[in-house]
Image 1 (cartoon, rainbow, N blue to C red):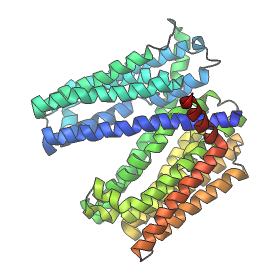
Image 2 (cartoon, one colour):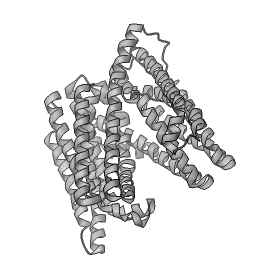
Image 3 (cartoon, rainbow, N blue to C red):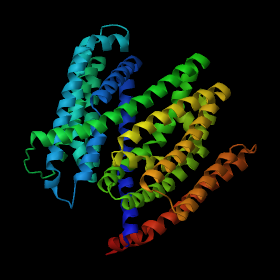
Length: 495
């Protein structure tokens, strides 16, 4: 098998591994939500949701983005599979995880009364925040372990740590909620967090590091570099949150709370259920890109390969989503939420452009191009906010979907220009040929939605699902030798 096919095969294999893990984690989440709903009811679910939101916000700020910047520095320092070359970096990341965890924990304790007032409108939950503040320390310690696994691309260990950590947390939660009901919220949050931490420690210990002591000078230099990039990533994330917050305020003022609910439901479908594909693929893609970040040609090859696999994976998902969207909305929400269908249908097409711009965007982070990264974060979030405001003002929820599509088209073109000028990045004609076919398949399915005859409409859309799957398998086979792999598996079973 050629080097190119080996690279494509590795991307598909890793995506399949984490896709399976993510699928089971979604099931775990559904079971957890169901148990919470049954045992502690809507009130308890509301308390947990508010507590998690508050803690995630604090943790996102005090964590300083080391879950991403740490992976970048670890991967770029890891040479020739020699653990001694990155032992000091790994030790430093774990130390930073402890310090940022303590920082988050202390801040929550100090501002516990204020957090209770902001979150619940009273100070009744002050001690609740004091008790669960320890989970921020647990979370950062866990991140420190998982960053090492991801940075070294120990994907099986990472997948197992994520799966078993969440599974153990669920097993602990069910009996606590069953016996203690709403009083179990605080101990369950703490114990589930501790369970995930212990599992991450178990798999991290499988990496045979020798005890390493780094000098104060080395620690200061490396630490500043990791924190500098981490802060920029944190600021970028906060800009996205601010942009989302402002558009929600605008929608609420202009259309009312019901419209805000529809907005959140629509983008939950797009980001949490379809967008999870990008989260799955980035697990291996980012450390792989950071490892070769100094070589522009290798970076270009890696980004092209990732973009190719991304559009092939996302295309049948988009077409299936367009075909089944009324059923999906009915299952996940209620018929009342059918109002979000036009918005989601425009938004789902945007995922084709997002898949490629997402692949290119990681170049800036992998290279540590902090100034350009911050400029693009400010610029693109400003464009997103303006387009969303205009889209909703003129066309309501459907306008939001169209603005989402237009934004990611601009995002794609913008990153293409930036990466070309700064790093000499470009796509070759064979990629564009495949990309164009994927776009045409998705747009055709989108247009079939407007056919008045339901039999003809769903017949043609179902046909497009089949055509897209056949096309994707054909293209995947050319790049990854799926047929050879399948034949090898069958031969191994027969032997």
